[in-house]
Image (cartoon, rainbow over all chains, first blue to last red; front, side):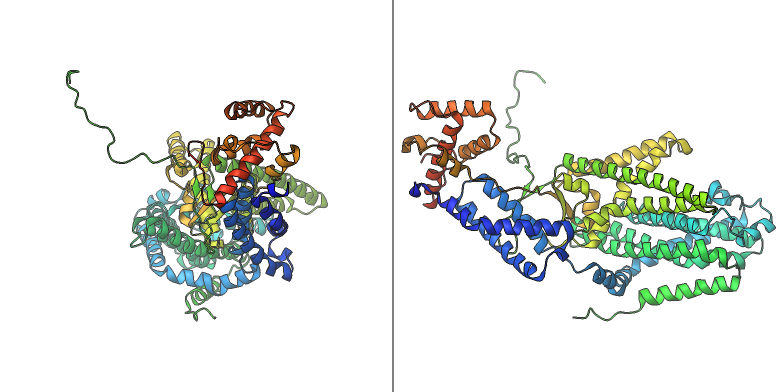
Length: 332
Length: 304
């Protein structure tokens, strides 16, 4: 019988233990990440992976056992994605994101940021002029539900009071902040995703956002409340509008890459822009969280115009410095 | 146009028809070995998404119940903000689930949400490099455009959104939902924007070697060389499938076919299964021996 023993069988018997070892290690890793392995096992992993790969090549050459080859292919694939897919630890990644990746991605998008900011400002100015001339335009820009009484028919005292409202007892600030944050973040992600459709919807969204702002400002300015309204809006608005502008910029960069890929293929260009845009967007969500806090808490608790405006100026300065200060090249 | 003289022109002259895409892709590792990966099919991805959707829905319902309970408890204690606390739990929970359920799971080492894992799928970077957090974020942010935007229109039908807008939403999402069917690698819009793709990488277990069983079961019934030369590698693989599946009727049929083909007239007391196992072992030994000498006999039409 001994001579009947297949080469492929002997081959399998010699290596099976190593494959099984690799399989157990992989199962553990896939459950809980690389932390589940101790140092020796971590060192062992690439060795086992290369052994499995060489077994696969060998098996393809000498064995006709489909089951064996299928098993080795699946094992090698799993090991490949672990060996070449490992990333640094989450804390390091978060630190790297805030220290380098995010500001750099934002800086790379400066053209798009200018375009998206410009559109918003154009919308603001346009709507401001229109509403100042003819208050009826107001209803064209701002939906009834959002105005909640703050429209051209309201009295000046009422408008004044909305700026300095006491938080109602049942309307806890936390809920307001949570609502504002989730709502704004959803809109920002949406503006980013819409950019894929060749920039146009995102451009529309930016313009319309500016229009709403302009209409509100015009309404308050018409009653001599421009200064107060600016404080009321900008205490969180600086952060929020900047975040929305960046979201629009990220959307533009994708749409632009899809429309004009340049020397690369359209797919590659879209993927590059998409990844960079995603970095910006992750930061945008952080900014909107801050904005939600400012809008939900700070605006309701601080009722002094000067303090409100100085917080606005401070946040503008902080974001500007943080995001646009030149960074050193990546340390080795 | 009369029937008298139809111009005889060969249809489809130059381009040979491409064989239907079976989803297998060559994927060479830096070590130079082709891993042969398979693209996940459209149906598998839909099923995975539906599963994830159901999980999210389940968690949301549980969260709502929890929020209600919290509201009831806190209000019972006496504070007024019970309802608001519940609202915060619910709003933040819904937001996090909607956006970070997919992102969170796909950033883990398995690169798959529970739904994908159940179907043996995983997300990979298209260039074979590592799947970065950015890519995961980008591919899932696009879902906003593909699914949630039109879904919003559909569910807001009672809130003054007219039928035209709903129809528009349906068309919109139709385009994106069917998008993967119109490209070779079954890429969703999000995959396109992030440079990723979804693979089918089922976990396989190492099953026993059939050739060894075959030898153990029968004391090596001697097949002659002519008998073993009846088939090639393709038939060997079919035989392996039959044996592994072990369906009684198929085994009987296949055994009868092979007996007839090779003119087997030896003792009948060997069961069909044992006969097939023995023949498999013999055939594989023969074919592998020839493989070692550099001749791979593809199928039975390939003359030895």
